[in-house]
Length: 297
Image 1 (tube, helix red, strand yellow):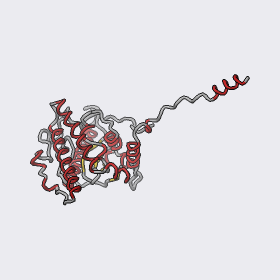
Image 2 (cartoon, one colour):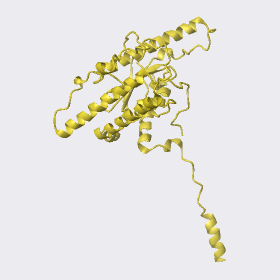
Image 3 (tube, helix red, strand yellow):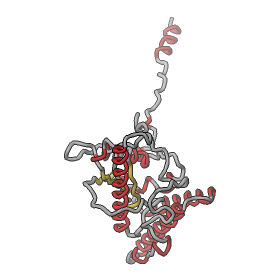
Image 4 (cartoon, one colour):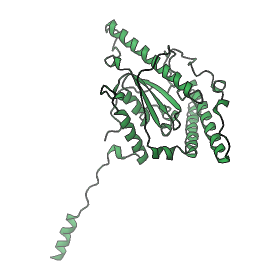
């Protein structure tokens, strides 16, 4: 009888089948924390109760640990979708995932253009001319805003250059609308990831990956090679400031860097100043269709 009791006990204590983890729980803890902070940013509302990131049309920018602008982009699908795609590595182009190191992004800024919420790309030439004219006007305004934010970023950069593979279409400079700028990392993460030695290592790795793309593909965009130089300058300056720190001397001035002498003009894409062409090697292009939230459980 005792043996039968033990057998029943064994059956009743059979281990439960393990549950499949949620998608949110799969990334490393620091990545989870980054995405949680990003979600908070994307949920911030303006004075009218609108979430800044819900705007279909607008411009966004990324900044590093020192507040240095590093990238400017635009969206007419929804700011939330575009920013998430960048900062959760959901881009479909392999080059796009090598140009910008997500670990370098500490702040995000958004400039929505709320007046174009109902404006969409005409599906065919047969649609009414008024709708087509509204769309063209919205695109022109979006391009002008992106170029204006880009110029501001260049002016505020210690290197007078940022990591855009393709320079935005040259447009008339306009006044910037109301914007939101917030941290997407905690103070603890800033102290850990922001250490100079960690950033030097990651920046060197980013350059190596980008150089591998150039070597393997050969026929890459001029902009990719320009970004390679800019990243190398950023690495050299960071490494030089670290050397000055450990030697106990004054930090070097970024004023000694002549970026234009190294890469030429960063104010106009010489091969496509109006942004009319689509460069197959341009990592800023890619799948622009709305997708599911990459952070969904």
